[in-house]
Length: 161
Image 1 (tube, rainbow, N blue to C red):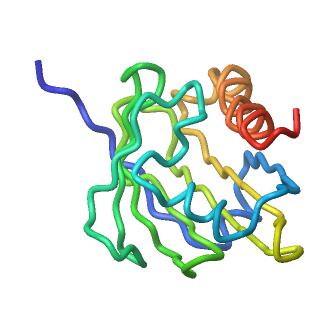
Image 2: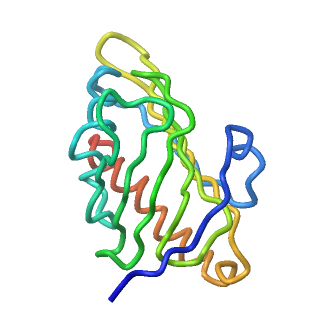
């Protein structure tokens, strides 16, 4: 059976400050910024996140603005197609979802910022911004809990939990 797709609206960097729902966390990681960036852009990106079953880059390397990725969450219950609109190699990348297999939001975007704090450590800030669709407003409390696992799993991955 063919999967239905629900279009989402584009976002830009201002959405991270204006979105009705904003989730953010900052992680002080005892690893060089280049290593953390490598994990975020590797072939097995975000493999430590329990709710994500697959993260696949759908653009060839080298990545940059316009890069695309497909993410399968909740064992394929929700599949997201992502478009990267900001890419500062080694430091920052941001994307918005173009389509999803579940109609829960009008706009959804994420921002990853990796800043060196020394030669052997860095600060990783992760922001999730959402504008729920009418159908998704009722499920936002559950979605907040699910998305909170992104941050909890990342804390555990970097030995911060």
